[in-house]
Length: 300
Image 1 (cartoon, helix red, strand yellow):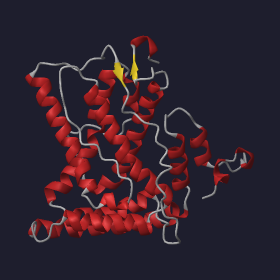
Image 2 (tube, rainbow, N blue to C red):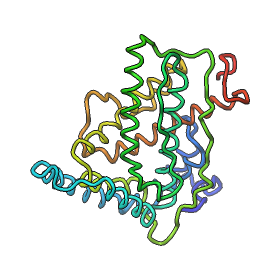
Image 3 (cartoon, rainbow, N blue to C red):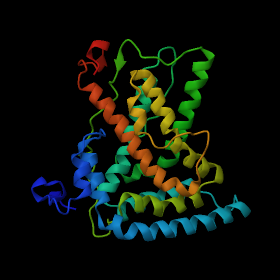
């Protein structure tokens, strides 16, 4: 989709483009290049015509895989095979905009966890940042490690909070040194005639493969991890002392898991929650001192 989508001079008051309206709307914070990619993705032919068909196929396939896994749970499980398929599928079939959104998510999520770990006094939680730079990095169990990192981070953080009787509060100085404004100009995503799938279609298409090649526990854990958006947002609000961004979180209540059949849609919401939270931290950093530390008087 060309940049004409964002050309206000092309606006027709009798036929307004909803994605132009949402792009211009500044009520939800988001990196500008990411926002453009998301609006182009929403406006793509793939999102309008292929997505409904792929979504139907995905749900039917997941039902049969679910039944298959019930009777033969250990018949075939291979994270290595899964990630080779994912890397190939992303490179060959997924659009540039959707690839940008997917790759950015790992960078953004890693920086958010690093921010939380660095700004809670009295605990020392090691993080394992995932910042893929090409499709080969996907093959190293990238998606599985993303879920494992999140759960391990929460377990390690809260075990220390309880053992040391620490409460998350706003620190005297806010460390934002790990928060970057990366625009992903260094990654040249393919744009061949086969790279047509939008973000939602790609996720719906890949979800049954995720379900088939992983164990039932791995797939269920991955699905339930999406609701940890609320948990991460609460940690951040306690550090920042500004709970307003909690209203931007839609994946909530992790103690009451949702159906795995909704995982694809919730994954898109998960990505949006991470992007908005990261942009909030970037906005905080705009008033930082040169070493990446903000004093209370410098905070917005």
